Length: 491
Ligand SMILES: Nc1ncnc2c1ncn2[C@@H]1O[C@H](COP(=O)(O)OP(=O)(O)O[C@H]2O[C@H](CO)[C@@H](O)[C@H](O)[C@H]2O)[C@@H](O)[C@H]1O
Image (cartoon, rainbow, N blue to C red; front, side):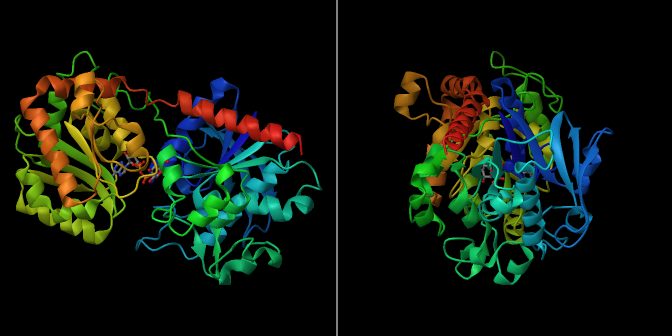
């Protein structure tokens, strides 16, 4: 089975969020199942710089969405890549989607249409020696692939068999909706600009197109797969997703358990396993030092590692910082994002310098230290397709305190009285993303940490024993690919 994965970012080359982790880890998890994955990435400077010396030009397109482009085949960090090297579109340092002022690049529609059309050509056999059976595309940046196959298939591939398509939605909040003025530059026939095609409320909808035409639509947890078909959480796409109901499923994310392994993690001052968690204390002291917090063994140190957005419930934390401190918790926050939320958190940290500390920025090594030394990780998201930081928390004995939504609901077992008695709890969940819900969860955490140390340790150990790797989810993807390919061959 040959799969072309189409993603806009991939760990370790280029990462702004969880999509990169998934795109980076899934190929390795699928390989033992006989699925060979190559990943098509845009030629961001960081991606090109990471390519090994042996990369080869495998296609050249003199005029590709406004300038010359080449397709490079090579490897980086052991991953098998195809890279769309189109300097006029992707030779831009920094965040791949935003300019230096934090605004979307004005040509984002063309940039990712170019990537999607390139993927379709590879699907039609552009590379001669390697033709994928399945195109697995991620988020709106890859979502035009099924549309190119649908509208240009017969011309593009001379009527040959089309590859099957899977669209994975990592976050329905990002829909790739563009003004209709971009339409002429997408290279699609005019008939495609209709309600049954790419038109979305008068604009061009990339994610809408993917939902319309992908053979299968997955999202990254079963609960989120359910939520996005409801009016409340469907972000305008729920009716379409209900219409495509039979094609929609949820496959929970795993994590790379080699990159995230507290027993071998070189980014931790002290390494440890589930049998002996004592070394975590040295990591906690290092966090306190780095964040300028006073050492205090009676108050749990709770970290957050997050994009600073309302999705992640950051506003709630900022608004209620005094009450949070009053529960007895201490906070160490690492994040970047919304400037207003940054400022609100900074003000909270200034009011409580011994109890709340903030580091603005994106810092992968620091995120490992926080997981390896904090007592708990707080994830108060309003919606969360899957969430990865709670999975890293489980693996590192950093107890997740999470809102009961999306993948957070699917991956953390609330340590309520029944769960404690049965010895199965792995974290703390709260149902209402409100001040009361959040504070009650923090009070429970402080109570367990201070007064029920045996239960706390049990929760940590249960989490560390949880199956957070990719094996079972990779098997679900492999089975999905196999079903789609079998169906295609019967067409
Ligand atoms: N300041 C910082 N410094 C260092 N590291 C930081 C950081 N801020 C965030 N990270 C890291 O970025 C990743 C974020 O992943 P998440 O799954 O939590 O959210 P995201 O919303 O980006 O992903 C979307 O896609 C993923 C993948 O499917 C879904 O899990 C998720 O629910 C969905 O919203 C984690 O690896 C985290 O450690």
